[in-house]
Amino acid sequence: MPSVHPELSDEHEALRSLVREFATAEIEPSAEEWDRTHEFPVDVVRKMGDLGLFGIPFPESVGGGGGDFTGVCIAIEELARVDQSMAITLEAGVGLGANPIFKFGTAEQQQRWLPDLCAGRALGAFGLTEPDAGSDAGGTRTRARLDEAADEWVIDGEKAFITNSGTPITSLVTVTALTGPGEISAIIVPAGTAGFEVQPPYRKMGWHASDTHGLTFVECRVPAGNLLGEQGRGFAQFLEILDEGRIAIAALAVGVIQRCLDDSVAYANERHTFGRPIGSNQAVAFKCSDMQTALAAARRLTYHAAWLCDHGKPFKEEAAMAKLFATEAAIDATRAATQIFGGYGFMDETVVSRHYRDAKILEIGEGTSEVQRLIIARALGLRV
Image 1 (cartoon, rainbow, N blue to C red):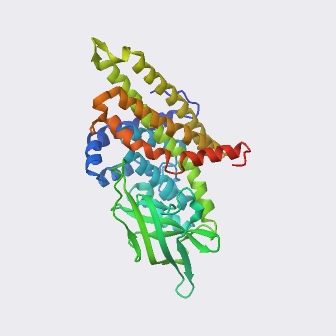
Image 2: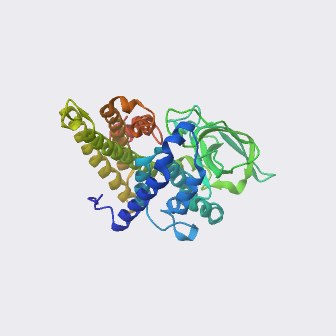
Image 3: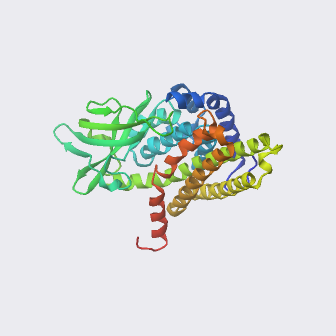
């Protein structure tokens, strides 16, 4: 597909072609089976690493590809066209696993963890959400006390809905915890640490091939040097990380809209009723027209926000607008596509059916639609 966006270079479009070819060959043939069996395909994730996808935005000095955030969004978009589970695996691995360590970690922490994370040999997770602290992330109850004699943090608490936290290649989870009154810090907890328990996987509406668990910490001890960034700055650090993550989720939503549109147009031309293709009916054709319009708007919002991020310009409001519009447009697109497919759209093996189930979480994860509206309203000067 030719680029019509000034933010995208020839290199970006070459990356798009590379990822689309990979997704078509390595993911699409098995995506329906992974969805049915709830399998996390470790071998394919490693191949995504071999392709360099997990290292795209990081410098070569830590094992990355020296690319930019826009490139990550393109890769996520193209994976999402085929399978949202693999797209969110990449999004979380890059944005929530590796990025906090790259942005806030010491040189020693970066050299220890980032080479494997950038190569896709390992995955990192981001432990912010708790059973009683979702959108109210500042309501953290997990606690970490410093045992000065042992020079260790002792962590007690729970986290909920944590992506990439229990895979066979998960190497770490960075968690937020109260380290003093009103003070939230971020601490790296290596996988397998005593006192750190990964709960059984959730039974989810969608994203069946994505790894998602609750986590429990009971007298979990890690070295004092595992503090990530400054003590007391953990919550602010994670809010910064989430701003980028919202653009990446918007890119995932763009991929969903694109696939729904592609499949709907193809089916509208192939499916005949009353002696003519169903696409000749305005009821169907107008649904496709609306999808095309929403796709163009969502893509423009998303890649403009990514460009701002890459060029060091403020992008918090633009990230919120991109996520809000693109994810809600993706929900609309999956519903319209399922309607166009009729009875076939209700069958699990149909791609649009899987996208319909998978897409709902896009309005919830990494900040709900309501949170995005709150951010935008406050940027307008409204005292919400």
